[in-house]
Length: 533
Image 1 (tube, helix red, strand yellow):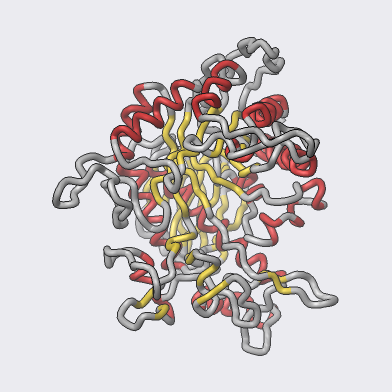
Image 2 (cartoon, rainbow, N blue to C red):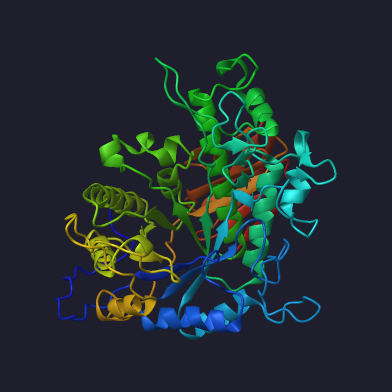
């Protein structure tokens, strides 16, 4: 298949630091706000300076952590972290960190992608820790009933849940996983709320992309029973379970309490579908607003890679947290795939895992005309090991790399890629040393990020007032089907331009698909709007 991105094959730099051939690729950093301050103007300038000194061309900046914002024009409460926005005596921010960072970065031809956590919305023990001060916080509106001092019940409860039969690692009747509370994307209201929050961000700021993190289910207790396949005890939000039972009824397998069995294949696929439906709805909605926006994800690549595991369907990404990101690439609902290949270069097994995942990533992304931008755990490798991984990624055909993270680029100690126990650990080296090594090595010549992938066809999205309905999308020469999500949303991509009709049961609507645009059609047919590129 013809490659979307032209990649020049170059030799690795010699030990003396020979400059490498310029190319179009991502040279990016994650800017996480748990350990990297992004509170003041000085903090913003420090991040920009790091990018400039290391010839980076993109910053993936965390601006939504746990249902809060590092930007003023927000549909959610602002972060309550002290000092953000240099507040005045009344507590009002005197500047907008995201807006200022965008201005400074764009002046240096550096892209800014808003890095947002989707699933986790609180990291708190509500009976011992202070609650959010802003009553509008999603945790107080749809997870924790502050007046009753307990979780909400019924439709108002958005948190996902593990069942009591296996509560290991959970608390609060299975609704808190470790220290985190996750919304369940199988709850239509939770998914719609999160989509609205992110679309507000797309409209309000001149960002180059949205980067989705934790768009999945949390790590959850594993159910083992002799003679049966493994099950994952998560996803049991009452609203999602009710939707599942209405959809599949007696086709599914249930426990004695009437809940789907944790290893039931239909229940597994249901949970994957909820995550995928969220990504599809966000992608189409965001690109309808701004066709140039690049949608990416910080994707799961734990443990053994797809080759060693016997296929992607045997990996933890697919079977443990229900994140089918190769399917997202095939459908075209992400533009950049950035699996977090956080592997120690000096550990032989992890080095093999890195290469396994890397090969799979590049093949999957390029077969779908999307960009492969592996995430490298600089914080866990010596500088030399990190640079080796970056060069291997380049030689494998990746469209750049992204390092975690700009504020912590070297580990506390490391054996410099040696497995010899006689070699003493080395002391921690500075970020400045890392930036200098990049600018003299793999980032010696400046580069521009690749453009957003372009599909020759167009897309359609819309709503029908049904959950799980089949939508027939047809033209004179093509028939496709889509399924509505819990909010009635449906969508389809990569449609050849032309005249179409969407049919849901007895309702049918005509619409036109234009290359590079998202057509909007709601059923029953009322209004047709097309978002022009």
